[in-house]
Image (tube, rainbow, N blue to C red; front, side, top):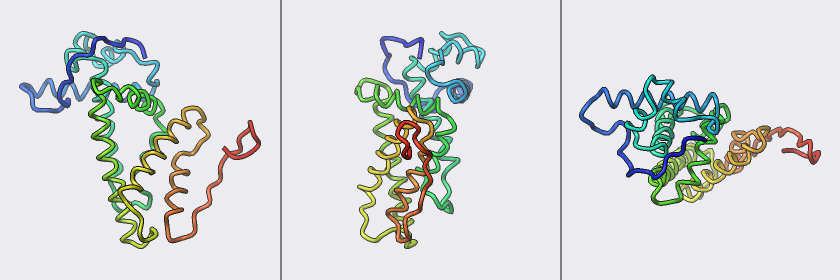
Length: 221
């Protein structure tokens, strides 16, 4: 992705943190929503700061004024994506766990999966703006998965005695690993694989999934 800014300034607070002017907060939300749409439509690698600035009718300097750096902007884009997903996929009546429904949605927005994968690597650096975001996100998502596991266990849908805390981390690792594989092979049905794993933990017989044939090996993908 072009236009990498260096060095990275100190991390600003979240885009919607209290500030002197509501107009500025509204503009930051507009920028984040526009960036989300552009990356979802055109891909992460093809996006530039100038394209984002043009989409919201400001200069590139004005864009950086609101977020400080490109790294800060992209981190807040992921945070905004999470807010949208939380609003869309929090449904206690749904049969599938939230993580499966979100991964199914992610297959429809490959550019955002690319952004997530890129920043999760860069964010290992404790000085990167995404470091705290991912640490907090893993904790939050694990909590959501734990809640889904316990809900299903209470309903008698999962085998008794499962460690919800440990299993939640395994589910997240599988989901992230599937997204990595999917970026190399779009024939992989990520949600179906997560659904199969979930069914293995259940009290009913595991659900069968039909996988596409891998033309390289003649077996399933």
